[in-house]
Image 1 (spheres, one colour):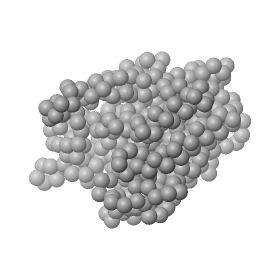
Image 2 (cartoon, one colour; image 1 turned 30 degrees about the horizontal axis):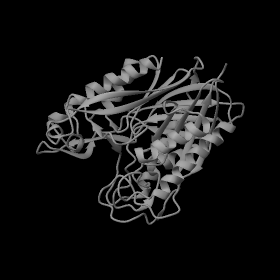
Image 3 (tube, helix red, strand yellow; image 1 turned 90 degrees about the vertical axis):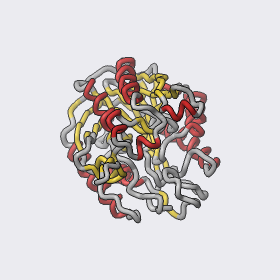
Length: 383
């Protein structure tokens, strides 16, 4: 039996005051709305199994909201957690979903809108075919800049490693407009800094809304962007930079749209979790947190497309290595996937120079090797 699919976009802009996520220096709730936040859902079925991919204009689906959403999807629609992947675009200008400043009413609203979007997408399901495009964009830049004294700052390292690939999977139905596009690309949603108190999807949310002029739903998922920031970000923050980068990215995706090819494959729909043990830094061990952290990574497959994700921050080198291991296949490696409490996993080389990502990571320099191999194994397990 062939695959069927439907999609939906619903508004998740809060109606009540919310503290924004992503920066610790903010001391009061949001002050306005620059651009509205959206939740995008893709529902797929092969007649036996269902699968859901969700992307929300939030930092990430932290556990306080992830577990109720998974429970609701399973109770109401029969979709088990392993076949429901929830991705945050990682905009730093959306309501927080964890911590003491969380608005519980917003979490209930986000849960309800997720269920509503998936349900609506299911009602729209029709037979589909798949196309694949592989493009690129230069809107991101490696942010680990080494300055004269040898230290690493959050700046712009023009020669640093970076994954510029934009993977674009198009789902065509019976109409002229695609049912959905699924995109994996790596750049932080941090044009707007901690001085901004307006709600915004940042460059990625703005771009997705613009791209939906030619597709019903543009599902953006953020790749290995732990060490990648938007190019040219300024402080104080200016929305003109976010809008310019969004426009540039739209152009890059338009070019990718023009060079897609039919994607042949089966009608398999599956999902899997994989528990891994990431080794802690010595300081974490001495603080009583154990030698390792148990982290759950997530993978889904629809047809020949495989997506694996980490509930934290993945470096670009990690994502590129996993994709290279499956160079002849369609494999996307994402951050901010089905959770958000796992933190940064720097590559081994980063520990030689330090910097923000190494400083805040709870893991030792051996952790990235464990994560990379676990991703490769998870792709294999998806079949």
